Length: 318
Image 1 (cartoon, rainbow, N blue to C red):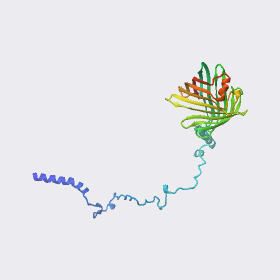
Image 2 (image 1 turned 180 degrees about the horizontal axis):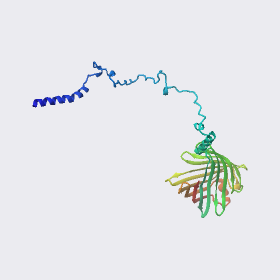
Image 3 (image 1 turned 30 degrees about the vertical axis):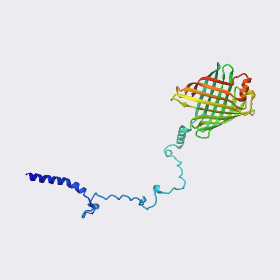
Image 4 (image 1 turned 90 degrees about the vertical axis):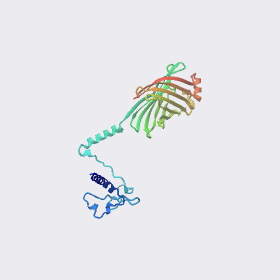
């Protein structure tokens, strides 16, 4: 009985090990075993051989000619764009033309506008109170616009020291700059001169707002102005704005107390809080100094040549 059990155990182990041994036996090539033809067995096919490295790739074209991305670069003109619209086959063409014109206008061709008072403030200096404003408004499209600018200031005791308004044609000369030309009218100077104006304004690298203008009066006087400011976000609502304005003159104009060269320099630092993006009260300081012959004219008139002011105001746009 024990011998029979031993024989059964050996036979079972041989039965289990036989398939594994047959699969891993070295030196056996089933493809050359006599009597076996895998290609003739139904449902079985021999896989394609892998391409040999360095061998030329077979052409995708049945004729062997280049096709698809294998075609050489051509120089033939591009085909003409279609001039018809499929919707015109089903709907009235006049109505479809009107709908397409409306779509193009709403997607970038519409007229826009902006009104902004960058400065509208009260200034406190030397025991006095003054006022200052600087703003602009424009209306038009991306390329051509009508722009109005105004700035000025003075004291509540002595009235306006300077005030002006400009009407300008503005044309985009790039993504960030506009070329401007028009007229400027002085409202508070003694001569009340009218100027032809030409300048450029826009957004310089690193987000500096800059403006350069030249003014040619009907009396032959030539003035220049350079302005710039930068908005530094401290938080999403708290913004610090340093600002500079320089005014120049080509000749002495005693009637307006303007001397040749650098007329005055104004430096400001204002901190605003945006209640909304359109409404932002601010506080800050502003230093305004007359220079050269302009300062000498101020002394002759008994006026201060420089003022350091504490300012409080409101910046608004819509």
